[in-house]
Length: 397
Image (tube, rainbow, N blue to C red; front, side):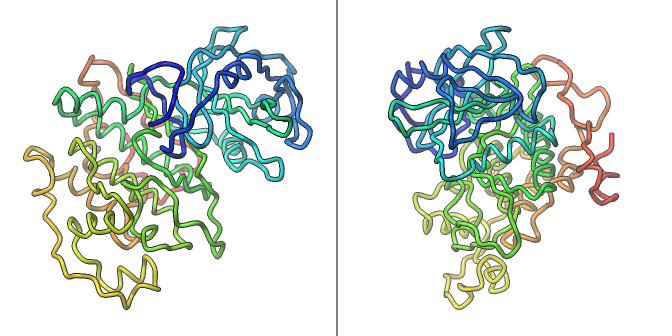
């Protein structure tokens, strides 16, 4: 992630919680404000009546009323949204991540609302909100919201980039684990009606000890409501679904599935599948791989473009795109997520039952790097268990 930090850092050090890659300069006062921040329960203060010392609650409303102080250690991510710190809880030495964003006092913070909903409906593959508090900026009218999150040291981006730098393919087991866990996270938030809208390797945190994945950065997320328009300029470019490029404002959670397919292809290839420099260029890259969309496919993405004349290009065979040793099951999974028609894309939990992940269901399977146990893969939530029985039968251990 681009931007200015307190010191040079390697990509493997960055736990990226950003919503954008636009860099911004962060002043030293920001770190001091977080270092001075404290959290207290049980109620989150109103943005219209902030406290100067940064008070907050335990998410969900604890009753202890305990004071919690934080010490900022270093900046681990920044962008136009604000800044992310690695910090320590002074009382316990627990390491946390604090995402600090400028709060508009006129509006509720959508990310906070979604994160608090996920506190009530937690998932093993979604980063947890621990606390939140407000802090005053240097200017009188500046108010900052600070989200205290569990700290996870790596990202899929940093891990894949490190392998690529040393010309070492990412272990196929890692690809399976990351995509399977991402599918579970998406199944959970989609069941809640939430669309993430910025799935990319930088927003997938990883615990390097057991390769457990945590979906993070809900700064672009939204609860989609049928009939309510949404902005189409959303999601990072390489991972944008074609309906977004076509300017659709009534898209569905299927845009996250497309992004997942792009992430999976990138992990298998070692580089982005659709590296466009603009929206038009992005669409050209997609057509070069999938071929020209039919009129019906265009209608499913945005009916306003059905009369537009596209050059007729035949799609490539997936075997010509991926490495020679890429399993057929891996290519089939990617193909089913990258369908032009949004409704035809693989549903998240249905994807967990895909044959590509069969190895994860074999008892005794261990991590390839250290022989350690796999992360939790079958601790189903009530929302996951509400899925169609035929899907659940395929994903059962």
